[in-house]
Image (cartoon, rainbow, N blue to C red; front, side, top):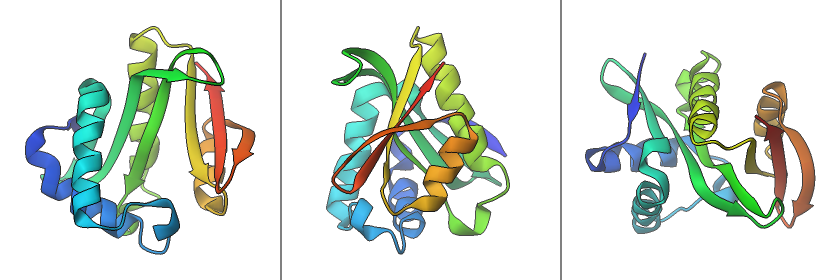
Length: 152
């Protein structure tokens, strides 16, 4: 497995992997191709150094987008906001998501952040359990989302 920073050339791979990864979880995802492309561009603009892809045999299998420029309204300071983390279903449970999450946390620490924050879908129990296994704790709900935080 190779881990590298995302480039603009990864746009089509991002759209494909995102769409497949959110199958069955569409209530928490962008569903139109144009929205997904705009989301990719927004993630690149927020913190390009924290936008990372995992590849196997030069094929994208997962992405993480960690934004160290994010100011949390709850923490009232900059945090390592993990906007996105997904892995193709057929590549899950191989440590790829864990590796991507660890890289996002490393990126946050390198940028001097001491708190990571993310939002998981309220009924996405598998994701919530995954983040809890990596030291995140639930810190409240907002509509269909659960806020999760971790001290770094």
